[in-house]
Length: 254
Image (cartoon, rainbow, N blue to C red):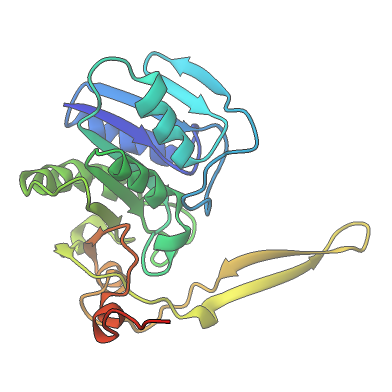
């Protein structure tokens, strides 16, 4: 099996090293094409107004001056020669990608681009900041990641479905298992704008989320991660609200 790895935290991110450890439990044929710099929050953006720069880090290991989407395109359309990958893995992201994060996440966008190009794709993220504010528990993703991926591949999902996996921020003994979930809804009241002043007296701002827990519905990705479950959410790029579409018929004539 040939696997393409990417992420949005950048070529030097510790989560990419965790992703490679997971992938090497599945195969020795691994290609890494990741952003040169941190692209968190880049979503499904493309670099269209600047040239694409590619740097070979080592054998089958490349950095791209661009977004996760750029990386997957470059990997599949230019860098990887011969047989195309059987799987795209994006991550492991530092921090959960659940609820509304799905629309912002460069990690998930990397998986979506693999899906668009006809390759089964999975996004992986490691939650942190709930049980431990200082350290990201990469060991949780590393211990459970390969087995979860194997089980999902056995189910033979099509390339049209992106699987979004989130590992909870808890101790090994507190892992409850893995469960399929639906996308939750974050409490947007937790979104904060942090205003600061620089050395010249000019204002600048940081966006961030208060780390307080919400009270999500059971069966959502939020609920699963809060309660020690590995969350697996099947996603699709079809953003159509089918309930509204079906309730309004075919429209009207003019």
